[in-house]
Amino acid sequence: MTDDGGRQGVGEATAVFGVDIGGSGIKGAPVDVERGALAEERYKVLTPQPASPESVVDAVREVVRHFDHRGPVGLTFPGVVVGGHTRTAANVDKGWIGQDAAGLFQDALGLPAVVLNDADAAGIAEMAHGAGKGRSGVVLVLTFGTGIGSALFTDGALVPNTELGHLELRGKDAERRASSAARERHDLTWPEWAVRVDEYLDLVDRLFSPQLIVIGGGVSRKHDKFLPLLKEREAEVVPAMLRNDAGIVGAAMAAGAAAVR
Ligand code: BGC
Image (cartoon, rainbow, N blue to C red; front, top):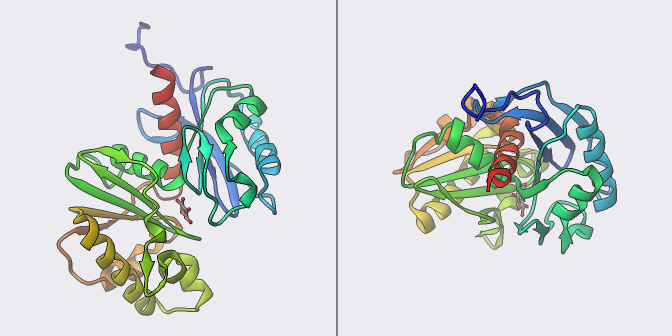
């Protein structure tokens, strides 16, 4: 143990790095996992199109190399990830299906890498440092963006890869109707979109009876535009607190946890 009780300074070689791989941007930063905050300003590159595994791996390497980082790296992926393998790719290049993503990043970076679902990463960060902090029982973190991501917790433990954005709503994939991208695609007003979100929340409510629903994703920045429009429900519905940084922080937390196992 060192003098600081075993904690490492964030600038040191053992700091943990988080990368959030999204449909439009790939952003990363070293993370202070104790505080649940970025240790340095994040660096972002545009997601290559098509976002094939090779081009995304190159872009991630550029993001990580921007910093002098030599410790573990956690990365989010917008699809199902089991044991570091990417299994689905609803909104990204289908070439990701069946890849050993953790292996690809590990080889390309020469650093230990952990890959997890993007909503699960955001959820982990919100539970530890944000809107779900200290909350027991069933908590559902939902991210509204290009798709709808979900992270389900019971007494703080994550059930990974719940993929609740693909529940059926009015005969369609729910995220096609109620994601933030659907609001833009269909040019919906906030009240019109809120009706769709309510319908979706009714559905997840019926299935999981959460005590708390945390609304994250890019649109959570504008929560004052739609949260007050949602109907009253048993579950408390609150905006995410870490906003844009939740994925990076959660990915780094997962990598940090894996490193000490
Ligand atoms: C994917 C999920 C992802 C969500 C948010 C969905 O289309 O299937 O894995 O978490 O989008 O990016």
